Length: 172
Image (cartoon, rainbow, N blue to C red):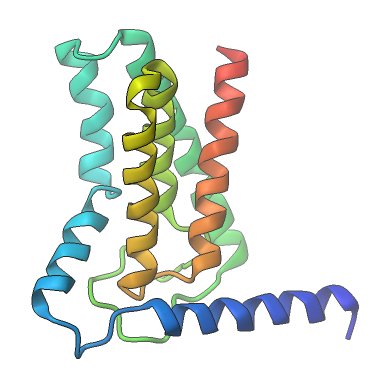
């Protein structure tokens, strides 16, 4: 076994251990579960797509900021889907507290989408950057708490969002 394979296995074992420590259990209150489920939906397709389309239509953000957010969301989504199908990491074997959108775990699309939109609007309006980015980070955390992603899935998704937004900012 090569050093690289040992390193990947060790990371995977560590990731699984963190998930089992941080994920909610069926013994946690319904109120707590409902709260985390509400948070996780902020990174879903309906909310993230609406968060870029509604500002384009209503003009509550500049058209340029909304267009960049839409482009960051689209590009990061394509990257996530390509990686998911290439890596084929199965979702955690814990009982998820919400339905999973697909069977692939790595990277987290919700974490990517939420942070791509938040970073895009945060760059356009720095005074709102901290709450937007903070909210997006909590969305990513919710995926682990609900047992549908390993922590590494979330970190990778957030890294994809960061690189996508920074690359777009440099180009556009």
